[in-house]
Each structure stands twice: as structure tokens, then as C-alpha cells.
Length: 51
Image (cartoon, rainbow, N blue to C red; front, top):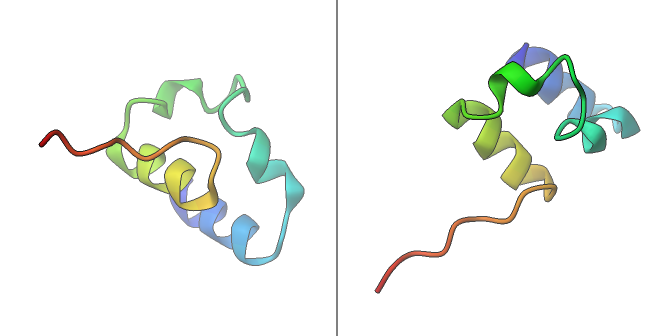
């Protein structure tokens, strides 16, 4: 699944921007790879470091 997401992003598939609301991807919302990808493409804010 993560390879598909990377491929979709690389080929400018506009569907990847809806991954946070896609019911088929909800199961992955807490997966660190999913979070990193969502942050990479800008649909999820990056966590701020605590000082």
C-alpha cells in the first residue's frame, strides 16, 4: 500500500490528497509510515518538537 501511495504521489495523482478521509485507508491512520507520508505531502501537520 505504501509503495502505491509513493507511486501515486510521484505521478501527481490528485487522489492522494484525500488519504486522510478515505475510508479504505483509515486502518493505517496510526501507522508511522502513513503519518510520515501524510506529513511529506502536506495533508498532516508535522509534530512540533517539545523544547
